[in-house]
Structures are given as C-alpha cells and as structure tokens.
Length: 111
Length: 167
Image 1 (spheres, helix red, strand yellow):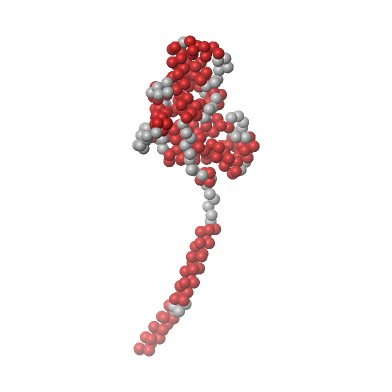
Image 2 (image 1 turned 90 degrees about the horizontal axis):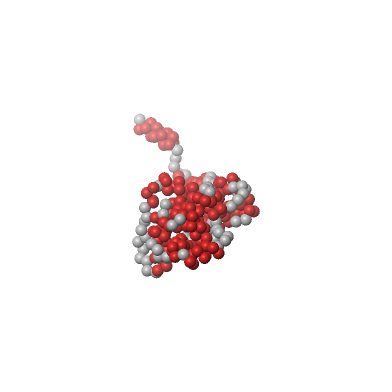
C-alpha cells in the first residue's frame, strides 16, 4: 500500500486533517483502505490504559536544609542528664593528688 | 497550566512548583512506568525528572509547557535507558489475572514494550496524552512530516505486536 495513503489515514485518525469527506468515502468504498484504517485505529486502545498513581510526595523532591542546632541541643541535653544522674556518685570522689598525698603520709608513717 | 503559576515557579515559589508537580506527577510516572515496567525505577526517574524541571524552569521562555516537560522526561528516559540497557528486558507480570480488561491492559503494555522507544513514547504521548502533531514535533525536535511517518510505523508495529485484538 502506498505510504502516502497510510500517512493520510493516520493523520485522519488523529484529527489532523481538515477535509475528511474524501477520506471517509475512500474508507467506505475501498476494502483495502478500510482494512488499513482498522489496523491503524488499533492503537487507540492505548487511551484506555489507566494512569499509574505514585505516592511520591512533593516534599521528597526538595532537599531539606541540614539542621545544625538540633543535634547540638540533643547532645547538650544528654550530657546534662548524664551529669545530673551521675553527680551523687562522683561528688565524693577525691582528686588523685589527695590520694597520692595520703599514700605518701602513710608511707612516711610506716617508715 | 497557567502562565502565572509557571512564572511563580520560575521565581522558586514552592506552592507553584507543588501545583505543577500535582498536575503532572501521575502522567510522568505512568509515562516512565510504561517504559521501565518497574515501580521503583519509575519513581526514581519521576523524581529526577521533576528535579530537572524545577531546576530548568527558569530557562522556559514561552510556548507549550506540557511539551517542554515531556521533552525533559523523554531525554531523561532515553539517557537512563542507554545507561541501563538491561532493563529493556520485559519483566513478566506473574500476578494471577482473571479479569478480561486487565488482560487487555497487559497485552497493550506488552505490545508497547516491544516497540522501539521512539515509537512507543510517541504513541503514548499521542494516544494517551493527546499531544497534537505540533506538540509532538516540539517534544521530539523533528519536523511534523517525520512525526507523521513515525506514527504510521508505530501504529503498524503496535498492531503487529498487539495481535489484532482490536482489529
């Protein structure tokens, strides 16, 4: 079949041709053209395909600014809480130099 | 999509960008899904395409916004497919399908997947999205005459692979 008639039929299917009467007549009268028209029209079924829906939110597209203050506050809070919990245990710990001094005194006593 | 929204999006207005996203996200996602046959890949691609759209919207001067978005989508899909040739293979859907309309849908999708990209993307944009020849010419950056002859070839191949179920 002539390529130009295929292009004309394809354009006719797409509504891109103004003068349609002659083509209609050709489709009705010529069997080969009618068959070709039906074959071309087959692609119209693509329109029936449903859109797939995506749950991808818009917010996922925008990279978030890094929040620097939040981790600092969390770390500081954790240190403060740890200090409050451990304070009763650590307040009675004597500095190491006192122990050394006491040891020295003790050794001197022994002498 | 009205010009005001596009202008606002150009200025980085998040609400305008969101409006564009809501309008086109399922269309672009479906467009990607038909080619990739994989939800995760299609979502990744959709995300990349919209990032490109929002980054490049400042360069959009005038004309058809829909065609411009699809142009970006097609470029991105084709580039990705060149990089990842292996995902051309059709992943068979193993779900048990009983309803006739679902079988039809799968047949249509399979037929589309057997077509070369330039033909399947063209058919989807024409038949599903309803882009006219002028818009298609702008999306694929080829003359209208080429669009016409490609559509004939695409329709012939689609008919061949779809198996004359509608004919």
